[in-house]
Image (cartoon, rainbow, N blue to C red):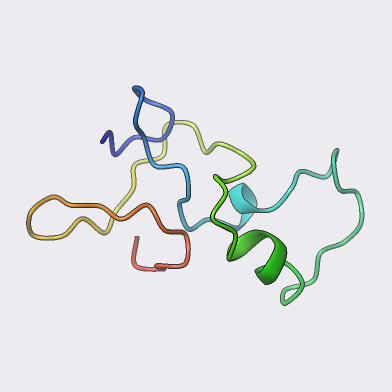
Length: 75
């Protein structure tokens, strides 16, 4: 797995980043409150709606393992 978002065929798709997990203003112009985004977006197993191209993920374990889970805020 690549640790750089959008690099290679297998990169992180569920990083912990609010702007990437919520829909864009173009597709969802209504306001999304702090608590309103958890169920439909944050806890979803779907890939993030927006790519944070070039972001490098953190949170690797001692064996360079990475769990692609947006609910793990240490990533």
